[in-house]
Image (cartoon, rainbow, N blue to C red; front, side, top):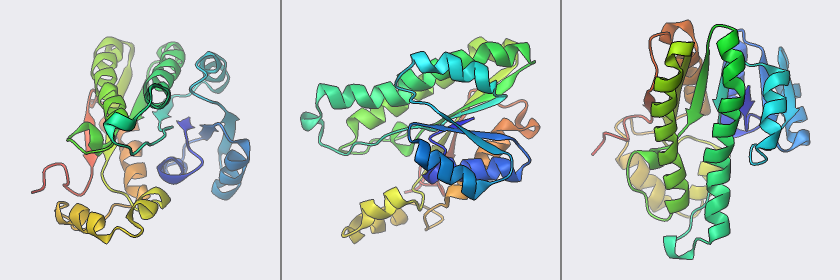
Length: 235
């Protein structure tokens, strides 16, 4: 089950899992987007309407879907100077990225335990690895996911549940293209600090998600994996 799986990186993750032979359930708020994505992906792909900010919905969906793998990908972004961020905006970011993902993870964990284990992935960000201006709410929420990954991997490891995260670098999505429009200097700065000298592709995140959820990573847990072309260590 992939939250926010109808578009962008979530859609690419869904495609990668389908290519690997998995049955995929897309979860999200907008049914029309889910229907369109499921139709395009085809194969063993279905969907469930779920708003992770309404945490009371998580238990019902978790029981109905009974996933072996959960990818907490749903998210929203906010680029704004810290002084201008309202309490409502800050709460909204945290409700989606942290509270919603935590509630869904708790809801699926008992079923995973009963079935002998599972994999829970969080989609983090470069904003959880170094300072970026004007994303204080987003960055703090992504930092919180690091705490969840570390704590849950230790707490649930004996139950056979592995918990990891992927921290995407700058990926060529509609969101990034909009961010670069009319701002070539920003794109140039990003590429200059990325050792591979290019943007990543959504499929790069999908492949990493499949790896971390597969038996190839059966001894990997508690990891925040940057998929960033080296940006987090570049100079």
